[in-house]
Image (cartoon, rainbow, N blue to C red; front, side, top):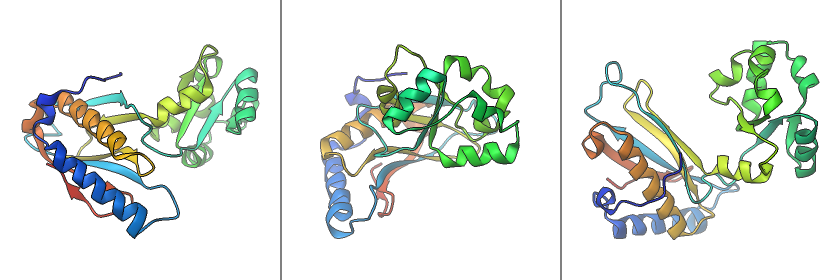
Amino acid sequence: FFYSPISHKAMSKINSQQLRETIDEMLKYSLEEKKRKFVETIELQVGLKNYDPQRDKRFSGTIKLPQPCKNTMKFCVLGDVIHCDEAKALGVDFRDIEALKQFNRNKKLVKKLASQYDAFLASESMIRQIPRLLGPGLNKAGKFPTLLTHNESMEAKMHEIRSTVKFQMKKVLCLGVAVANVTQTPDEIQQNLTIAINFLVSLLKKHWQNVRCLTIKTSMGKPHKIY
């Protein structure tokens, strides 16, 4: 799902000038005052209200943002011969059909595989065989592979996944998603945040009436309430 128009009505609840000042303050702390040895992610934390997770329909939605949310992600390609060769050339980890057969649906081994990577890509011929070869482990970990066809660029697909955010309500009234990172400009961060918030509000049954609070923070920084 790609969502691009920015609704000013939806964002009128958040003062764009104040949001920009908050982003500037956050970046100053992360890049000048307390620079870390890794690239910090910027997370949007959402508190909901007037929702009953037991009775109300749980929402779920995915959106591709203009800029990558995470600076780096570790990928693994479950590929046919062509995709394995392409992954090798790009320096991306891969597993072929023979490697997957070795797992023999062993839950511990599949769980370990899932924990080693942020996301998986799979060739068309492989994706159908994954449940048979690996069982439900990758799906349970929320890392079922994204389909990779031969008409697509592997690099472009990885960039797309790094730019994709998923909002999913579970059993609690709060959720957090990575929406940007501190290597980006304030404009890029604000654009990603604006689109992500508008999309989230569009998923909610009563829109802004379901939003209790919105907070942004870097991985190691303090939280900043923006709504």
